Image (cartoon, rainbow, N blue to C red; front, side, top):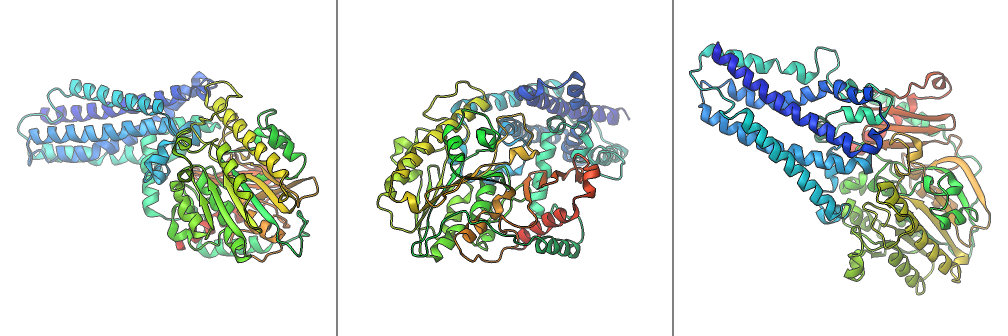
Length: 616
């Protein structure tokens, strides 16, 4: 019996070893995100550790299962083998867990979510991925992860100087008792005896998203996202497939076209040229006429006062691949991913440049970064775009000026130069890069080293480049017959404070200008990225291919959807309703609002969307 007790004590010490690691990781998260932590009360910080304890225990117990099973087989294997296995097992998981700690700390300020498998959507392009981080970030990450691994190796050797396995003869009942102890781990792993197994709602205790995210265990969250990705099942299984299809069809059929205002002048003898500028990470929060800060983007501010502006235009998600999928492909963002990262599925879409090709336009695409990132190259090539200009088409010294690629000013200059010899009609897409992290631009209007200050400075830089481009192009004879559209791929968290679940983080600019737009309008109708391509084609007088999700801007039922990793939002004139996947409910409770809004059809929409994606 003494042998069994000693072995259980050592196994418990191994459990404490991992609990210390998770508590330290949680402390790092709070310290690294001090801007948000500083606004928390002492009770909230204590709650992060207290309420999160259940998930930390569950994760630590997961890590005990395989070693525990090996200990229960001590009658068959030597203590030397067991101790050697424990050492290698611990070292491997320390390296993995420490790497994910650093990844979690680095991504959260930009993505607003804890680390999950989505971060590895882009791992196949390490060169482009590394453009988001500086050498300093890499060195700091290596230092932190190395320190974690080194520090916990030291702790492991202190705790288990004699090894984890207890020396001595192992009786049959000792193996049985140890096996029973391992079997009982299912209770803390599951989170107790409640009907519902452990999930993110189990550790949520605050109305503040940041608090609940901090309380969760990052490693548990990552493992859960891997499990979901492997299954590729529909995360929005709210009702039967038949019910969802019926509600979805009714929802879409009830949304009929109303009188569509003609926003551009059409010449029956000459096709309208189109220039589409997609700004990286721009939200209405940086454009004064759209309710944003003053003085950050003066050129866009001025353009808004001379153009047709959509004031309630929403991005479909919070990543570039999701925004581009919607703008060019008319396909909504999915939870945790986009159709663009699945080329075999994206092939089923009719992309925006294809409509222009059908009408004999000269199409071109400009992107100052590495176009292989996000599967963007495959996506653009699929559209049969005539000419593609990327970072590789500029002098190498320009590509080295910024981590993410050629600064926007040089890309706009190239597009402007090409316009001098462009054959009409043409459709140009210019996708900017400079306002992508790490925001290293050849410009210094807004001083400071915080993420928000660097972001705002990069916005000011891109705005200045766009302003110079428009000023020069306005003098061209092409201006009078050109539609210039300025929008963004997605919104941003800065400037804050806004939560990743709030609609303000997804409200982005959509500005129609150029010589064919002769009226100043503010269109307050709720509109979304998914409907952009269809609406543009209709404005040009073209028919569009049938689409399950894209519609015209001007319908009887204006709405917008946006999706993130752990929920989705539904925006209608009555308000915004956010559905949290973890609690499987609308948060906060819509209360009386629910009586005036159909909240079942949006759930059907999201369920049908994911079924559609899986079946493609």
